[in-house]
Image (cartoon, rainbow over all chains, first blue to last red; front, side):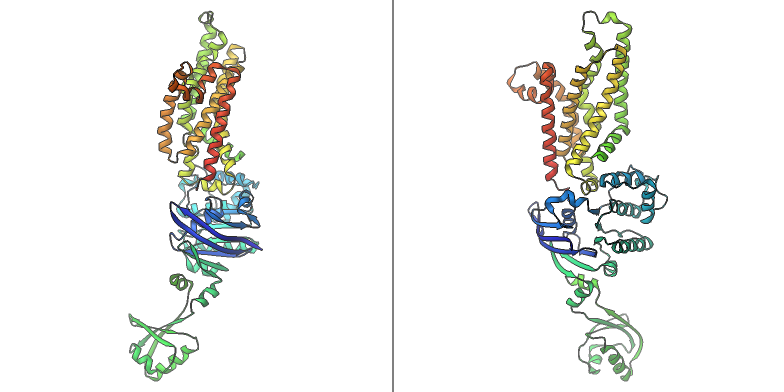
Length: 300
Length: 227
């Protein structure tokens, strides 16, 4: 079953086309990573799906409910907005109580405290939100998105600005939510994180979905190449590489005593090392770098 | 909706301005009522009932706009400005937000005015139902207009300015129009509640209806807005 189905979604702001016919499917129970440069239209897209903004044209359905049934959709989703603007004057627990009441979530004070602990905010119930650090505000923003037992959770950059330990905690929480059968729609500028936890990734550029697929599919589609970083003496150049007599090997650059060579297949690497050794080239260090999501993203 | 109502009600109660206004209402009622009770000769041929509630009516009719705008001018646009509205709108309907905000604010003022009327009633040993309903109708109208302005104007600083301006102009123009037949005052005569208050009785339904129209317009604007 599809968690999100978007058809030809357009949004026009002050004469500018921010979204230009988005077409997207998100399967239920997966972690869906949504990437895009600043200003690509990611936030606008999420705002439309969560009822914050109205679409200019097109349609979407969430968990089987069409965009005309937005109030029913709201009962099934949890939203962590992109900005950490919360009710600064409220105490953490009071804020969660208010948000829970809005969602019709009847969990007790103890259960709300437990939720705070779950997102890495123990013993802050009585603290006012205005005294929170940026990271703490992110965490409480995630906590309020989990109220009402939502089936689909939108998390807009949940780990940006968090320390590594907190970021790992949130990533683990996201994976736990997936195990519970929830669908996560996640945006992040941390491509390593997206690569690590997402099942499917979409890359948005200039108001359109440029690429969508699993991380492996995207890498494959982006011509998977392997970069071999070699620290040698003497240093390598295109001429010496040609003398090795191996096809599908390309000299890329030489930088700070390290030469970068591009090969198409993994099997070529031992052969390359063998030929270079035969040429009395001393190899001190070998580092292999395969195509990453970052490379795919940069190529879009 | 109830969560928003409750939050708005207590949020209004917690502000210094509102506490000061409630205290001012209460003290004025106590002083006026106790003074009239201890000096019945002052009432003379004057309708004693009208005298007892005159201070409350005076405060609401002449300063009601100013009080409500001062306390709640940013009731909607504050949330839009701080983007906290996104937390609300992704959880509940826009109708619930407008209605909850309105009821929270209106009930605060009804609560404040009810305390004053209760004090006066205890002193005078009489109930002032018509006066109470009249004041409630005017407060209803003002609260609805306040919601409309706060939805229409997106900047809180602007609603504060417009609120103060209207708070001063509305009573002046309203009462002037109520007793005048000048053509250029007709819009104020029929739009503001003063003419209907002067006419009293069945006419009091009209400010109530205009208030509902303000609320409906607020919902219509809010429903179409990107937040």
